[in-house]
Length: 532
Image 1 (tube, helix red, strand yellow):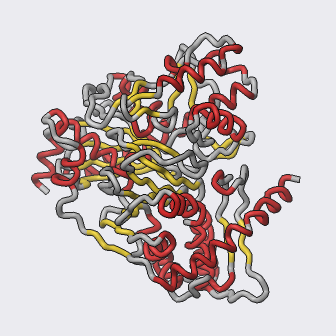
Image 2 (cartoon, rainbow, N blue to C red):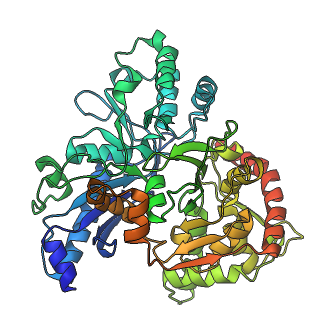
Image 3 (cartoon, helix red, strand yellow):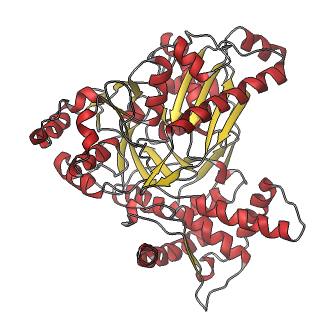
């Protein structure tokens, strides 16, 4: 306790703040990565005028609340006021679209990764670049706005992501970590920045519109992990901590997206390593030895925070539907006068799933709250089906939803393993769904036939990951690679549990996924029904 107190008082601890889909979290860590204090703010996206978004006011309200909670915990636990830090890092949900004019005014509502409204743009750019351009990428949103002839496009002076926006406001620097930048526009692994030929191709594509900008001039500068990315300004300090206690001048690491910070939080940035992040969305990140043999719509090509090539199998939906059902069970118990803690409810029901049939008894579920590009759905509608001849039990019900949570992502991972023959010895899982040991991890391992490792820190997520990147600034100055820093300074004593594929579950999952693929048309019919 005294060592931690002295470290905080001397400004030796680092701060990481991540804007997740449902929670903004702030953590304070020691030099060895131990979390000393944390704070948070719960928020939800809004569906406004056909767009999944978060209002600008909530971004700052949430940031200030999360930091205030962190500072209050420091005061309560250590009896000192948080005024300094060694470094700060900002992370956010990946990509999306936030354009600004020359005066710094936001031109349209933040269009998040969850929107599937850029199909035409995505297809055209993929064909132009011969490089998969997913719908959620910033360049897809920009070109779709051009195709839609949206008036704001001509006024754009700067285009960035949520992490880049917050970092800019706190430091004045228009920069982005390479991992997050690789979801704005394709990154050339040889140069560590945007592909020049593709920048030229895009400018040529839109030349007839005569906009007063070139694409390279409105994108953030690309930085790699360890490079300095500015300092907290006086204005930024007041924005982060309105009490005025936090001092300006604190160094910042490059802002990153949740994909990159998830890789750091699981020590999965080496070639042939991988991680799976499971929350509101689910995505597998596999660090490649070489480029894939061809372009796949189901696989995005991004990078680690150090610029290594990564194949990402991304699904927009994962745990939202599970959370909704768990809440319903909680309400049911409460109606009968039984109060059960949320963590206990999840653990009990997840363990119940292990009693279910390997094929889920013929039940089928889709947790598609939003569209799912990998299965061709522009919009979502959560759907549950139990045919008359199915075995409709509680165990099968929960098991079905756990199977379904990984369904869309599995389709992309299967391409890597079965078609590209990528060798993956083990994947690290992180996210709240893995909190109950050997349940979701066992199902996932069986689904993709790869062992799934879960660290004790699996639930810390991206806030911890970006705090580690902030902490790494000093190690980078001293010439230490990020690989070695994580291996030697952070994860050398990490507690890891491994779930291995189970042959019976693997067979049952394959039966389930065949029904899953055939039933997509039912979800589309549901979407059509509710849109009429």
